[in-house]
Image: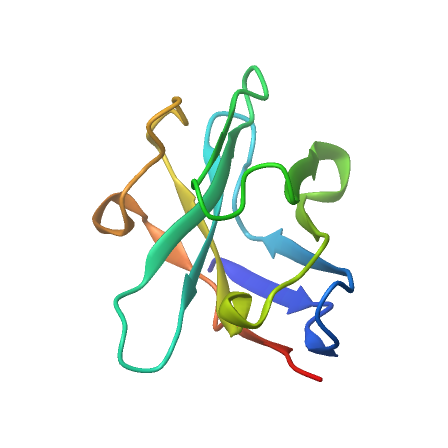
Amino acid sequence: QVQFVESGGGLVQPGGSLRLSCVISGFSMSYYALSWFRQSPGKEREPVSCISTSDENTYYSHSVKGRFSISTDIAKNSVYLEMNNLKPEDTAIYYCAISSFYCSGLGIPASSMEFWGKGIQVTVSS
């Protein structure tokens, strides 16, 4: 059974930073793409970033490029999202997900994700 443990969310002031972590068990990460999505109230779930575990190719959405950084630790079955210069519009529930598709420069849609974490709240507010 695939299980996710997401952590690192919370309340932060605009301009601040957070680091999200996602530990995945019950699944081999060697040949998959790891992704972060987010969903705000009234909006569709949107891709934020993904990374291919085979060659560490990455994708970032236009709204987070240059501020967020995704990384993995295969030995720990973990994926991380370093979020800097956070803005109020980054407020959302952030989800960790995995897919058998390759993470290209175009990203991977939510419909192609095979397993999802439960999500973690990130609130950016003064």
